[in-house]
Image (cartoon, rainbow, N blue to C red):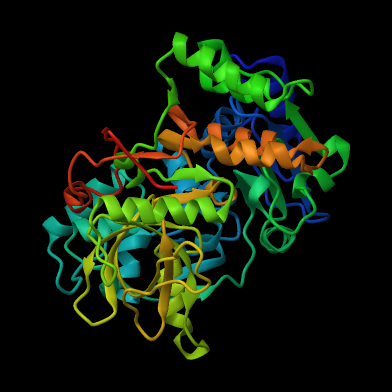
Length: 513
């Protein structure tokens, strides 16, 4: 095993050494901190798989630290230094903003796949500052509009936070001052780490292989496969000797009742009723598991209820809006939304790239802050994005029970489209994590009664596994069609004050069925 400050388990050590060997054949020796030019030849793809708590993220973080120590450049989604032929690079990617932000909280500089596919174009005047901050140029002089003190502020910010836009903002600039547009990546990169790779479809996988000659996937085979892929995940198609499975569950050793429940689902003899008895028992022993008699409406503003059926999702959303007194023809500040795509014609491609690069991609979680300055525009906070506050032309769709067409309280002629985000399907929740998660158990019971399977496992078990492993600290297993009353109005003050912040709240009840 290559040297590390950590004591790896046997399976982590084996995976680490396999990855180190792959990197060595690609010209990077982690043992001797030696970098060589890429040797060329066949591309390499390898995967590290394991269930929740098996140590995948820890291994990813340690491999990142080891590569950084060798002198490998870390590719950021917000700025890429001018390429030098002799430089080796690493990009760490996740399919969603939320998944990337989870890694960033662990000290891993992750960005979204989209931010790597599309790169920002900087104004040459301010690109000089970016090159200086990244160690590839001299300190600029006579930058229009910036004093020496402003440059010092930028340098101090970048020393603690490796973000070029953040550093330039600290100098007193706005994004529109230094970013002139976005372009599709034309040149390949070097090494790519992809977290949550169970979410990749075949097209995304092929795109990544075109960019990265050396690609390492991290994924959980117990999750739900992308829709339309017959229950298979991209790493399951790799040769057996290119997949390292982490079988030991490390977080269980810390007596985590949520993970205990997740891994109990692997028992083929376990039925739905037996599983619920396990949840009840866990709830009596540990307050990190709650046997919920109602959906807690306060939590829905920032962490959606996880459901299986669309009909349930729509009923819960309308119940949430009703108890908050939301009018049909307007949104309240603080209502959660989910981006459902961007509807812009080809001539507005630059605007589309701009919005997507800011994190407004399909599936992004957003909080509505209020009306924009122009009709049809909304001020929005993109959860997990590095620069979360944006204004965008918006088309908001509120789906109604038993109605085919959604109600649209207001809309621009074109722009970003949104569905309400107080409840989401478990499929859409993959890649996200929240401090507290509510799982709507009657939906999973319905899946169990239907007897459906996916990739040889009962569908309800895959749904339950994905849903409960979204919880970082607390799981609420909701067993009744009831909704609490809110403890107060919706809030956005915390979002205006600081970038991206998870919120947990608490609150007698109301039927929504």
